[in-house]
Image (cartoon, rainbow, N blue to C red; front, side):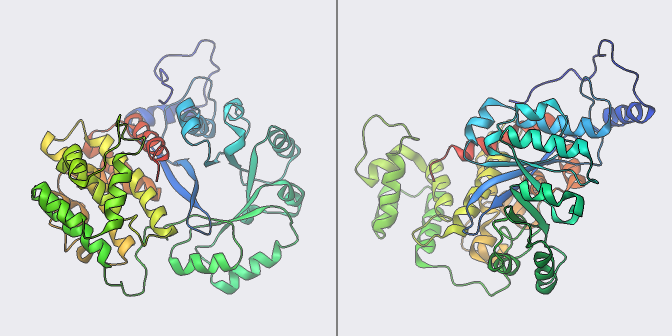
Amino acid sequence: MLPRHNENAPAENAPARHPRIQAHEAEAAAFPAARFLTRHPLLDGDYRVVGYELKINERTPLPVLPGATTLDQIRDENLLVSVIDDQYRAALSRKLTLLELASLDSPLVEQLPSENVILAIPPQAPCPELLARCQVLARLGFTLALDESALSPGLTPLARQCGYLRLDVGDNDLMGLCDRLARIQGIKGPRLIARNVGSEEAFAACRKLAFDLYQGDFLAQPGTSPGKDIDSSRLLIMKLLNLVLRHAEYAVLEAQFKLDAGLSYKLLRYINSPAVGLRYPIRSINHVLLMLGHDQLYRWLTLLLFSHKESDGRSQALLRHALVRARFVELLGEARLAPELRGGLFIVGILSMLDALLNLPMEKAIASLNLSQPIVDALLRGEGAYGPYLGLAMACERYDHQAIGRWAAELELAPEEVNIAHINALIWQEGLDL
């Protein structure tokens, strides 16, 4: 997946490195947890996931790629080689990829798929070289984004040519945000991205102010309003989950499915989908259950908690987010955990967002599920066999690089292993027919 570099081999005729670079190389060798990718989804006003922002921490040490002469170049190239990949490009061809680079000058930039890449303009004083480079990239078809906080009179002409203006809304009240929007209303053309949206209330306010895309933790947070009672359809799914966990007879499971025609239809549609790859269609619930078995049925039912008959855009976005997390956790742990524990990795990842889905504290959200103790330990306390894997996945979503390094060290995971799993989880989720 990710291109490999022999980071220890000396480059021929390489220029002498600055002492800071040499010190950085030594630091990188001592702390290999530096190249970890992090991601944040980009959502539209209907909660649709339209893309992802990928980052590499700007403060931690990184291995030096051949030809790199500055610390900024090291970080940029480590990020760029993570997304210049045919599989990644094919899977996310309908999604945006937002990259925040220290410099736009790397020749690797031009190897990116211009049709779905957004390049954030580095926050710096306007200069002829920056303006010329941005014009070249725009002619090549790249979409540019500029931070409102970096906007200066000298950058106003460039801002008008950008596809997006990004505003950090995390520290502003509504009046302050309105004032900032009023100051840029003369810049016609760019769409608006709200960054650091921390709650559903902030998302609703930004949506009323005509932002176009949204980033932040608001999606994965339970709302502040009291949670509603769990609807009857989800209660039936939870009942089925408990029956499957106890390996109930298929006749008992079939009787429960027949209580909800919509649930039976979804099961038949799933088993007959191209993704399952059966040679002939299956018409009966009993036959489906025999084909799936208890383990696969349990996995499918956990997904159905997010996409039952009353699901909305937010539930679908949560499902996609949870699927990436679940697959990421599964990929990291499937070769490390004992066989009897591996099946719980995916379940932990999916159910880790059940509190946000049901707008309930996690303890109440899972109270009616007869979950195994290792899964409960991970969901409630971040402990047990699954805890470090879930902790690492969540840290990669929060840009929490201290936590990433801590969990990865505990699991003895190299940065490349984590990054490959991260990209593969994104590719896998994009290939699902949801």
